[in-house]
Amino acid sequence: MALKRDIVTSAIGIIVLTLICGILYPLVITGISQVAFPGNADGQLVYVGGKLVGSKIIGQNFTLQVIKNGKAVLDKNGNPVTIPDPRYFQIRPSATVPPANAASTAFSNLGPNNVATEQAIAANIKAYLQLEGPHNPGLTAANVPVDAANTSASGIDPDISVANARIQANRIAAVRHLPLSTVKRLISQYTSGRGLGFSGEPGVNVLELNLALDRLTGAHA
Image (cartoon, rainbow, N blue to C red; front, top):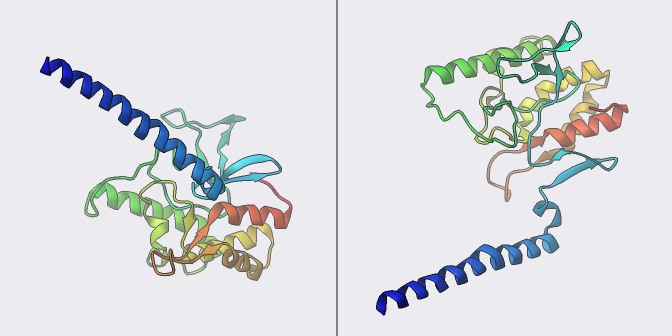
C-alpha cells in the first residue's frame, strides 16, 4: 500500500511540475517578453525590403564564392570555398564548421599553448594581413587586433573591435570609392558602448555597418 501511494504521489508530482515548469512558466515568460521586449525576444532580426537578412546578435560572413571553370569550388567536406568580399567589413575568425554557422556554435577548446592554437592564430593573422595589408602600408602582425587573430567563444560574434574596424575602413573606402572620413563616421555611428557603462569593450556591429554602407552606395550583398 505504501509503495502504491509513493508511486501515485511521484506521478502526480511529475505531472504538476511538468505543467508548471515545462508549459506554464515558459508561456508566461514568452508572453511577458513579447510584450515588453518584442525585438529582443524574436532574436533582433533585421529585415531589408521585407526580406530577412540576419540578426543583430548573430555574426555572419560576407564572402564571395570561388568559381573555377564556371563551377563553384568545394572543400573536402563539400562546402563551397569562399573568400572575403572586399566591399564589406568582416567579422572575427570563427571556429564553427562552416565558419559563422549559427546552427553549430563552438570554440576551439584548445589551450593557449597548444600547437594547433598557435597555428590557427598564425593563419588568421596571415589572412588578415593579406586582406588589409595592401590598404594599410606598414601593417604588421604586431598591429593586428586580438579579435582579428582569435575566434570568439561562440564563433558567431556579431561585433568587432573599434581598432579592427578602423583598419578595415581603409579597404572599404578604397574599394567603394568613399572618403575615409565617411567610413569612419559610419563606424562611430554603429559602435556600441560598454555593457552597463563599464563591462567589456566597445564593439562595432558588422551587419548594421555593412547595411549602412549598402544604403550609402546603393549596393547590396
